[in-house]
Length: 214
Ligand SMILES: C[S@@+](CC[C@H](N)C(=O)[O-])C[C@H]1O[C@@H](n2cnc3c(N)ncnc32)[C@H](O)[C@@H]1O
Image (cartoon, rainbow, N blue to C red; front, side, top):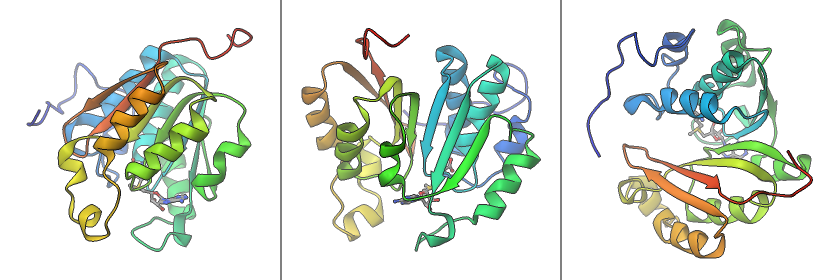
């Protein structure tokens, strides 16, 4: 799939959308902010986690949906200035949360995202955007699939995304074969890849996590 969806106000607009979508992000094109918003409106998650916040684009689009749902919160985790590549400071990301008026629905924490699964027994929504590669996918499914009740969203998943320069230059494990393994090994999850770059894998749980959970 290629091409741009319309960005003009009207259908799909939500309060604060323009300010959120001005934040630099690989998700800026192809209306991914609207995707996160619409999915969170439809699924009505209560507890959400995001790994990889940067300036807050996806975190805030999700938080806007939680605001409009009338409940729920999202906790974002990032190394911020300790990340050796392109990063944002904790202070600037915090300011973006405040400027968008969404601090009541979103909180951020400076932490190694790969350790965050130890902090949560169960969540409804997990979004992973950590310069993902195939090994990130394998690790996230191993650590988080038993804990996520509704949906996992992972940046990447298209063949085009596997061919980006840094993936090949640094010999990163491609995501497409990892997805095929995950589909075989996790039949309780249904996967769909939204192809417009950078692409997003949507994994929906199709079987109840645990009879004791709502
Ligand atoms: C692509 S950006 C996230 C973009 C963001 N989700 C958005 O909507 O624009 C990737 C982020 O992951 C962070 N990051 C990478 N590895 C990490 C790790 N192990 N722990 C925490 N943060 C990490 C980086 O600091 C960077 O801000």
